[in-house]
Length: 364
Image (tube, rainbow, N blue to C red):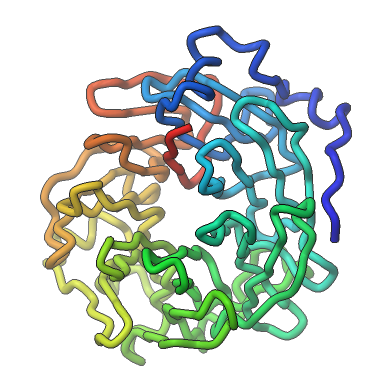
């Protein structure tokens, strides 16, 4: 399906879509000067949904309206272009440019599919891979879109699991890592989870060119309700992942771990005191540039934690009510909340909108 330019009445309504020229000059320069940009989906004060780009101090550089609630914003390798994906079970995505050089364009998942809120570009930026639901077939697929041709959908391949969520291109530039959450859903039933008793989560490594399964990792059968949802990749080709547990609240299973092709999946067995604070929910995962800190957010637990990537032990925590978005910019963690709080190192400010679940950091 070819992309179409968003109707300007949609773009100008409610969320106050603006191009760069209407922004403060200092913020506007950030999108052109090579400065760090922080992307997030959000909800504006008037209740409309959109996406924003911020600088390192939390100033708004660019903001656009979205047709509905977004989830994650996927940056293009050029560091200046982005795609905001709809939250499940939405079927829209919006491509936009940091400097407003191109009119934002909307494209959709085809009939019988919807997005799961995440995507990843190929190393050359030509293709966009999106996690999608073949909801009548109760299987996950990876939709393939041509970024050089209006995000025309060119095909799909199997995610090798159910309920694919976050997807990453691994450092080798050839392998996709996919978190298959294991949860069956169907838009006829809204956001209801239809197979909690028979979930089968997995983490799949897939050949990006052919769609062939390289390797699939699954948690132990006793933890089949441990939905693998988010992850970060290390430079040497490992994945550090976070989970959301769909079983009894009293179980307190391990919620984070690591996997790599050729190695067994390892869940970090941490003391109950460390696990309990997450309330069985890791909302987002980020790895520091030096590889020494794994950041984990828990909007249900109202905190952000720094953990060791080697053994998963918690190094420190910080309270953040309804906090989920995390990413590293420089050596410091950026964290955001649904209540509009922005933190980056010593900077803390309240923005005029609530952040959605995820952040992406690029340098324009």
